[in-house]
Length: 179
Image (cartoon, rainbow, N blue to C red; front, side, top):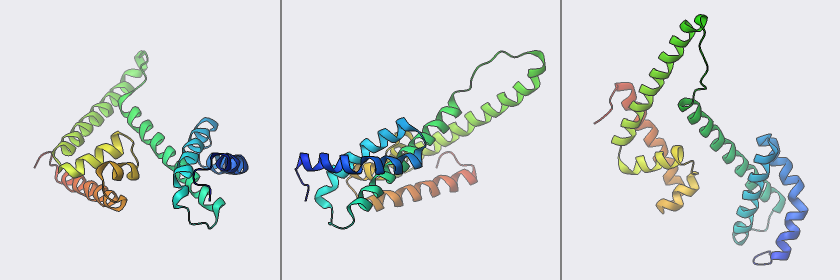
């Protein structure tokens, strides 16, 4: 249909841009993030056209766009969680703040200890699980990106992530850091 026809793809973008933007914005609620996700969606749509089956073009494109928006929201949330663990805003403490500061210091120390334990657990897990965990959580890669890099099916990555999480959970409950 549109394979290799740049002008036809540009018409497609012009025709559906506003509708797809609205769908992406509904997920992200941020104009800049929505524009970024929309650009990624159009790239994915262009690359996916050879596999398009000819049914429900608008629905197919909307699904791709919404999935890109959801992926972007998840990545942003992971980055925010990670940065909130490592970056505490500094402020001067006045005399009444000492008790409150002691609680925050204790919380940060506990969080740092838990993070160290988690790092040791991840370091001791089987290599296939470790690669998937690091790629998904620390490098913010999607399961599809990891599958492509590992040269396996996306379902394989989904299974490895599930098993890796279970592996960590079981050892965390037992208090193990190394096997």
